[in-house]
Length: 420
Image 1 (cartoon, helix red, strand yellow):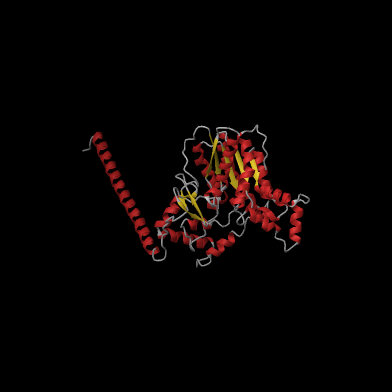
Image 2: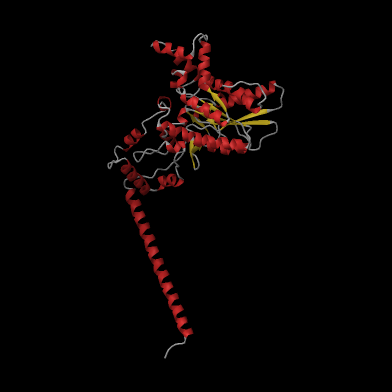
């Protein structure tokens, strides 16, 4: 006897349903076993790795804190010492007094983004050029009998490159600035010594790897999961160690740091010695990409932007035609239609003026080179700088003096003000 067609279909459906249930049950068990196996493997790996590796706990005891977007930033509401000088930050993490987000009536705001030069390395709060610029501009408007007052917001952070400055500018736009100053120096273009920043943050790298300068220059990301796992997982440190040993073909791991340093064996001198070389070409491509993003943000809000170039000491010992980085930035500023201020050019002009203007800068340099006992260039440099790149109090005053006419011209294009 055969079953009716309806009964056959019913039993077939029940069979398929039962089969599907068994399949899903089996799949669930297999997935559970797989997850359990992976968890057991990772837990076992973590326990074994802790015999050799210790997760790094970052405490951020001082100046810097980790920042998800730009790798590092200044600690907010902080009073402390940096490079033997006291400084303070406000609730926004900027050096200087507290500022409101809402701009008061008759107030002009200047947003300054930059590195340790803008931050004021080795200077007190009142010696930095952003502070001096605010005082000078307010004196100017008071002398003109205008009700306008000026507030200069210093977002500079030691170690910044244009990557960090892009985010500083982006965040600073909430203050509704009337003008932006972007300060650049040579190690914002090529940075071979970025590891100090991570060490100051408490991120000791040890022999596991050399933290790449590319994280600072914005060429590669330092993802949050890397920051998190470094602090919590010895197994992750083990995997990074193995990756570094394979990458540098050093199974012992004893020579990784040396090999990594040799891989990045270059310095800012390449910007002058090999201006068209592949490393320099890529460095300029990267920095101009970040600056163009900043220019676009400023243009969208109709905010003028001033590019300020500050020099390294070795540049002041070279003929003017060898100032390739400054020439490159000047050409870029002209192409992009932004203002440009060159501190190296101002220094050269002052030296010629001091020597009586009978000689050109190149002639002065040639005579200095020919006289091994002469300290003319060193002594002149030390008036304006405390080391190879950071301005002294007088140097910060010089930056203020060469910036002010350009800023006044940018804020009031009809005014007849000069610029460098």
